[in-house]
Length: 71
Image 1 (cartoon, rainbow, N blue to C red):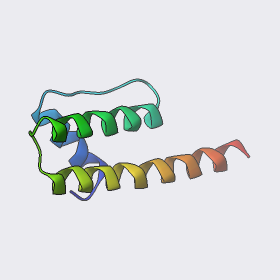
Image 2 (cartoon, rainbow, N blue to C red):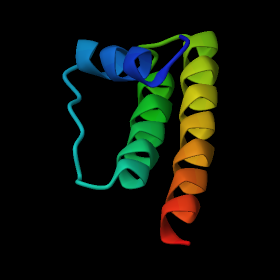
Image 3 (cartoon, rainbow, N blue to C red):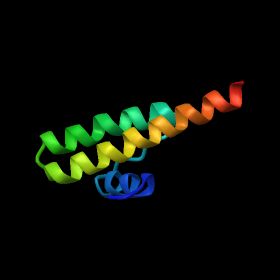
């Protein structure tokens, strides 16, 4: 899993389509869903860690972008 799109596709395989109107909120919800999929035994530990790493990196980038656009 290399990017945000890959994480979205993983969730899509399990019928999870998330859109809350705020990209950071979307990513936080995705984190929760990824953890639940792992705890349910539906994805491997490696997939969980890879997805969470992608989401963390995306959140950091999004927060930087928001700071730049605000001032």
